[in-house]
Length: 300
Image (tube, rainbow, N blue to C red; front, side):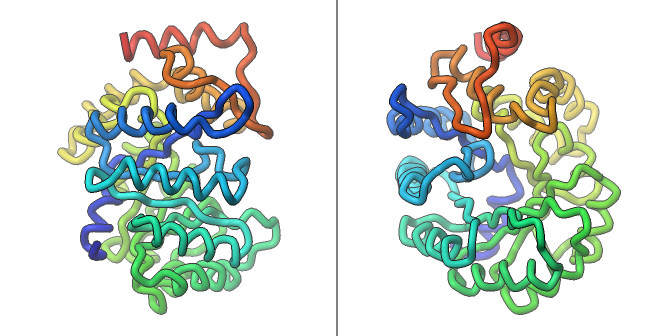
């Protein structure tokens, strides 16, 4: 896969699949495959196993690799696979090399979780991963509002496979400045806060957005993308209004129920269990009905 085709895959709905579990707590591979096929059949072309909606930080190394493998198998020639990697450098490099071995085309590097991150150290961390897999496109996941765009440009100067960025700072003005400082046309800019922020970020230069909603109602995510691509912002905001309450539920409590609400909707549709792993927690019985009502409206 060329950098051009990798870039094209980022300028799209970048789906972050959930990781369903069985009643004994292991990965439900059959449900996982079914959910992936459901998105692929709906027209989703980019899948990110081991993203945050997939509970990346709650998965073991073996589980992360299993999720990568089954996603690559289901995607086949139908979709591009962008694998989430992270933790310490050796772990991230090992997962990135495994992603390459499975046929994935790109890796997304999770924001370093350690509280002490210098700008120069951020560059060094990503450089070590990018240099280990030069054939793969590399997409930093940026949630640090203090990181300057010039650091991303510095990273790409030595690692040409750094082709895009998933920008997830909830500040459209800051995103606009960061993208221009890094090089607006040099990278593919993915709105990393999904559909609620996509219209604002597209107006500032994004051409793709991540989505957890797409697990539940892929048509809505694709409708928003089509509207944004055509410059139809009223059309995009019509979708925004349709999904607003669902996304508000996910964002409540500093996104405490981000994954939980998605899995609750899928459970209401009979597509997987609602189980999540700590530090997430299933919704209490009293809050499940509203999510079920929304899911039923979207997927009657």
